[in-house]
Structures are given as C-alpha cells and as structure tokens.
Amino acid sequence: MTGNDLFQQIQQKQSYLSVGLDTDIRRIPTFLLKYDDPVFEFNKAIIDATHDLCVAYKPNLAFYEHQGAKGLLSLEKTMAVIPDEHFTIADAKRGDIGNTSAMYAEAFFNTIGFDAITVAPYMGADSVTPFLQFKGKWVILLALTSNKSSADFQQTVQEAGQPLYEKVMRTAQQWGSEDQLMYVVGATHPNTFQHIRTIAPDHFLLVPGVGAQGGNLAAISKYGFNKQCGLLVNSSRGIIYAGDGKDFAEKARDKALELQQQMAKLLKNHSII
Image 1 (cartoon, rainbow, N blue to C red):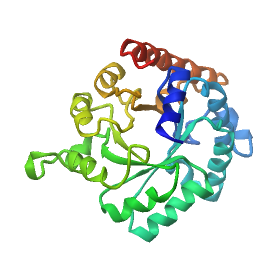
Image 2 (image 1 turned 90 degrees about the vertical axis):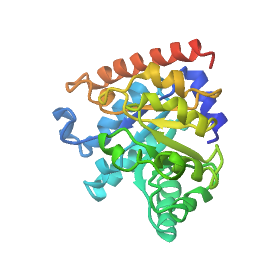
Image 3 (image 1 turned 180 degrees about the vertical axis):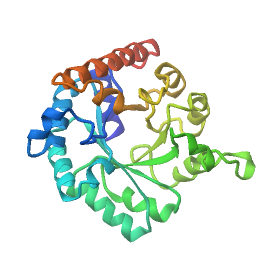
Image 4 (image 1 turned 45 degrees about the vertical axis):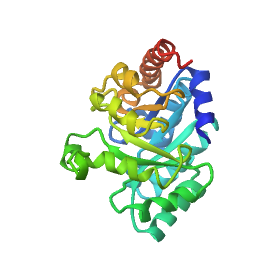
C-alpha cells in the first residue's frame, strides 16, 4: 500500500482512525470465554462494528504472544477477517541486528501479511534497513512515544542542541522514502507537532495516546496535518473496551463513530478533503 492509497481511504471514509487491537483475554466480556478462541471472536466483532469508520488496525503483539501458539493463531485468524483496504500495523517494536531483523520482516510481512511494523531505532541502520527491502511495506519508527518516561532518552539534548528523537527522524530519512517510513509521535506531546512537521513534512505519523491516555485530537491535527493528512491516530482501550457486556461491539462502534465524526470535521476545516 502506498501513501496515496492510504490517503484515498482517508478521503473516502473521512477518517484517519486506527483501531488498536490490544485484546487482553482478562478484559473481554466473560460470555465470549465459551468459544474455542475468545480473542478472535472479540476481535472479529470489533472489526465488524468499526471497519467502515477506520482506515487501519493495529494489533499489539504482546497481547497475542503471551498466549504462545494459541495467541499467534488468534492473530492470524484476525488478520484474515480485516478487509483488504485497511492498513494493518504489527505493533511489535522490533529492533535487532540485521539478519534477525530480516527474519522478523519475513515473519510479519510475508508470513502474517502485515502492511507495516513498528521498529525501535536504538541499534541504528543495521536493525532498520532489512525491513525496508520489502516492496509496498512500511517501517514505523519509534520517535517520540506517548509514555511518560519517553523523556528519559527521546527528549535528551544531543549535539547541535537537537533532542534525540529529532536526530532519529532526520537520520532515518536517509534510509527510506516517504512511502516506506512513518514515525511514531505520541498524542501526549501536542506542542511538538509543529516542530516535527518541519523535520518530516511529508511523512505519515502514527499517533497513539488519544482516548485512554488523554491526547487532544484537535491540537495534534491542527499542527500535524500535511497535504495528504499525514496522520494515523490510534485508539485502543478507548474503543475496544468501551463496553463489557453483550453489546460491547456496539459500544465500541459508538466510540469509533465519535472519533470519526470529529476527524471528518477537522479534515474539512483544514481543507484536507
């Protein structure tokens, strides 16, 4: 999927919403536990309820890997029911030496079929470039994450007075194009988006932290939009755990619809669509 393909979906749906499938078997409605694969049943219901309101789904691998082979099977079955037009993100935060990264890339891009994977840049180009060898696939590089302790390293000042996240973003642009590389920038840092757009004006940004973490959608959109929207705003817990009864999927849809309607208004107000 190219950036233009993604923008077309944003235009058609008037949405730049990514739904995070951080499916914790301990939090899903108890009536689903009667099924052989309750995680998949939960995910399928969420996808059925929200697919027309979002452009991406982002399963977090930790919620599947902790169940071993059974969890990975739930993930593969989930991937099979996500409609083809959706952008799929493996929130795996991988990052290792080159030959290991190459195997991770094979696993997530070819075997499971994701469009993108989140990657940690700490080991440098050797750990990132193997993921960039796959045509039509994307690396989403951790830059300025939404958690509190992102300040421990990501915002520390480097040479020339630039914070580490800025050095990461500028350096990585030498490795891949705007159709290969995105950045994670947390919604909990709204005041940085204007500056970030001077660093990476044409790249898509994956923005976690809206919803349960309190990020402000209007603020990040105002300063984060580019001519092709350039944002994928993710909400996980705020959508998928909106309800815990038999109507959990309807409650999830209500939350996703609320965000989509806000997004449609912002896209129009900023002349993106």
